[in-house]
Amino acid sequence: MFRPAREPQSKRHVRSSFYVVGEGILAESRDGEPAAAQPASSVADLRKFRFSRLGPQSRPAQQLDRAARTELAQAMTNAAATHPDQPDVPAGFTYLGQFVDHDLTLDATAVRLEDEITVRQLLQGRSPALDLDSLYGLGPDHRFDRRFYEDDGLRLKTGTTQGIPDDPSVVGLPLTGFDLPRTGSGSLKSERRRALIPDPRNDENLIVAQIHTAFIRFHNRVVADLVGKGVSSAVLFESARETVVKHYQWMLRHDFLKRIVDPEIVDDVFSNGRRVFETTTGEQNLPTMPIEFSVAAYRLGHSMVRGAYNWNRIFDRGRGTLELLFRFSGTSGILSPPPADPTDPEAGDFERLPTNWIADFRRLFAFQEAAPERADLQVPAAQFNLAKRIDTLLVNPLANLPLGAFGGRGQPKPPEIELNLAFRNLTRASMLRLATGQQMAEYFVSRKVDVEPLTAADFAQGGGAQLSAGLAKAVAKNAPLWFYILREAEVKGGGKLTGVGGRIVAEVFHRAMEGSRHSIVRDPFWRPFLSPVEARNSDDVFDMTDLLLYAFEGRADQLNPLGPVV
Image (cartoon, rainbow, N blue to C red; front, side, top):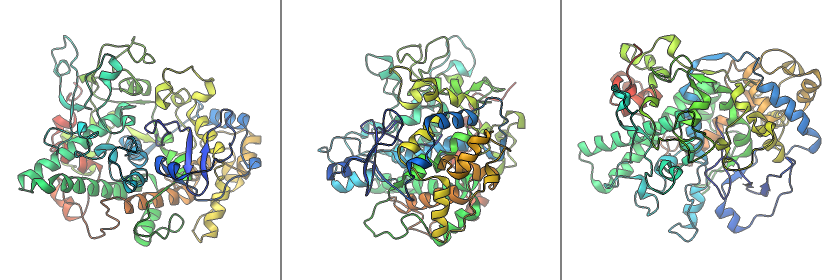
């Protein structure tokens, strides 16, 4: 579920406008049609997140009209379609991808212009970088963001779950460190439930929220280890942040990216450099984000979402439904079970995550890859969750998004089709005059990139979304870029991005690492050293399972505090 945010509500998903460098401000229109660009100003440059356009603009005749977008969206979310799992991609990577999206797209300077922010910091904070600002904010020394930290100014705050009344088991207990920190104050329940983190989007569904809590643990464990080694307090926080960010980037480059993108493309980009996106950059140039990445290529995660999950020993056998994973969050939901109405921010009795909804991370990430000898870190195949294959299908619950998922809670309910995630993606691309997939393939070929354009046969009936003859003919000529990229993965990539989509994602990740304050791209001799599995350190391996094992001290009872199924 990877996608970015709007101004002035810069931490939500629905943008009212995009500031595209060199073009101006592209506003979203009420009728879903492209709107004329508004001239930018120096103030706009400072205040808006910095997008760019990688390829050409599409012409009106190349864009699908509302009826065609509706038909395509309904085909992509057809409940009767068979949407297979992807065998080598554990389901946790779907939501790690969303966590990464929020890192890339957070406006880290969402404060008033006059408040302790320099022009350089404004531009840096509005540039995409893989530096975990969604975890750290502006740091413990900033007067607005020190609230995310403990009094020592080193450790991030943690949250405590809320026990289930009258339950004598572990779920009846409040457990510290397994929920996001929450404000806990205010006259309204919605105020008290609010997550005390730099980016509230990381509390819009439970899986992302639990991944964020794991990263809090990761940072705090690094701090504790550095204290134990006697690192000076003057440099301790920045040393911890550098260690965390570089291990995070290494994991993304060697584990996450290679699960969702053709590994040959990833290796080519990180070994030989970028060929299409910001190929020459000066030392002071800050990254931008191509709208082709934001609005198309990185929305691959929508196809990876499952409709239901084997969540933990209590919510097993598919009882962790997508609707419940939204409900048990503070941004999209109310942290409370039915019959409380999740569309009412003041409904429900729980103000912290109920203990029985703590994740069993063993069901989301394949620990047998890091520690095959640890039976206590593994679950039977029937309990393990795989991501759905990257293809032109989305699970049907995404045809009816909760209003809170896109900042619409408390507003009038829109027409039904506008709750369909596929329709929303296709419409936004049209409003931004995004290049078609065929245009981008042609552009890449002109830049000497080895891309094999899709043919009309690739859009004919087959696997994935089933299109009518008329719609198949239309997209074979002018396919929306997002659909084209998913079709590439479907027919040529074996469920991984390849061609146009793979190149865009790999190059944007490379640039975002290059442009980060701490960077494995600019420090090519750096190697990871934190894996609890000693042999993996000697082989320069640090995957997401290594990160979790380190953060949770290698303890199965912390990665799964509710215990196994009995």
